[in-house]
Length: 191
Image (cartoon, rainbow, N blue to C red; front, side, top):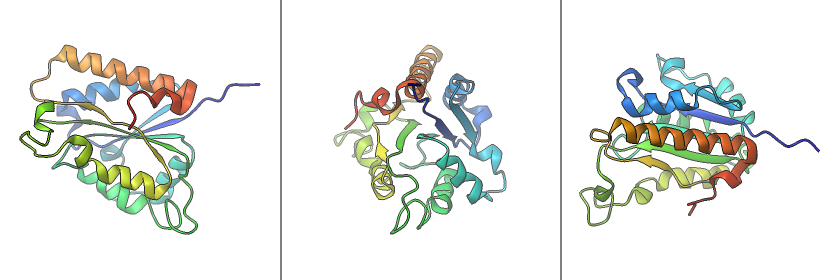
């Protein structure tokens, strides 16, 4: 019996990728993995007019969706928020007949400007990152997807090039493992 190859859709959403050390390095690390489609939303939709039918078809064709973005005001970037609003529609992603995404996997890959310590109840931001990312967990719940613990790189303005490369290699290995083994590759560290 042939082994299933799982498919990964990386929704890259950085408004100035050419200026990003982290997201540009992460994107380059996963760009040419067999079974992984890197989809740069800002490049695909510079006028912010999203082709909903195309995006929904891409979701149907993949098993894991990755939201790759910097953390903007404790959330996603504007393009990714718009994408969620217009693509994850009633009757497709949720609602009485909206089961297109049931049992698919979701992973958030993000970077923060602050140190990890800032994302604690006693830290600068007064909330943990897990608390701030609850809307993504709720979205997964609404859409019947399995939410996996995010992959995060903190302190983006001070992190070294070596640390970025190590993080990118981990990301690449994680997606390669998912293509071969599915959700079991993401279980380590899930909540």
